Amino acid sequence: MKYILALSLAIILFACTGGKTIEGDAYYEKGEYQKALESYNKFLSLYPRNIKTLYNRARTYEKLNNDRLARKDLNEVLKLDPDHLQGRITLGEMEFRGGNYEKAFYEFDQAVASHKQSSVAYAYRAKANQKLGKVRQASSDYGVAIRLDAGNGMAYFYRATLNISQRKKTSACSDFKRARELGIKEAEVAIKKYCK
Image (cartoon, rainbow, N blue to C red):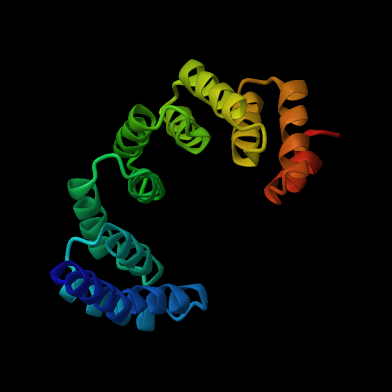
């Protein structure tokens, strides 16, 4: 009887609190970031170590242009779960956008180390290697990303930009065309510019 009572209480508590994170997710999807933030804050006041909600709040802070608090939440996510793929990728993206390519590389490298079958992790590490001038490593990582997921349009697109920088126009145009087929809109502009 005690077991059934404890289980019932756990279900009730989850139902009462789980709704807050779902509510926050719904606000986020609608672009109502301030409301999403309020919902996530309420949930985290009860469950401060909830990784999913910490990550979602970090993404919300990012949308609200508060990179300091986004980084704080992402670092907390990675403290609780060092192998959290989305946390690593998001932190790496923030560092990349800020021009901190070595730090971005570190985050993407950690993502690859813990997720060796992640095409996305390899593609991002390749992009960081490309910015750091490590052409051979970037090319290798793009190749792995594409072998792991032939539908990774981002990998094709950025490998094409690497090939353009290396004056390998035929290979670049082939990759730009594949990226376009996979829905990468920027590829159309690149094809018009480089593949005449």
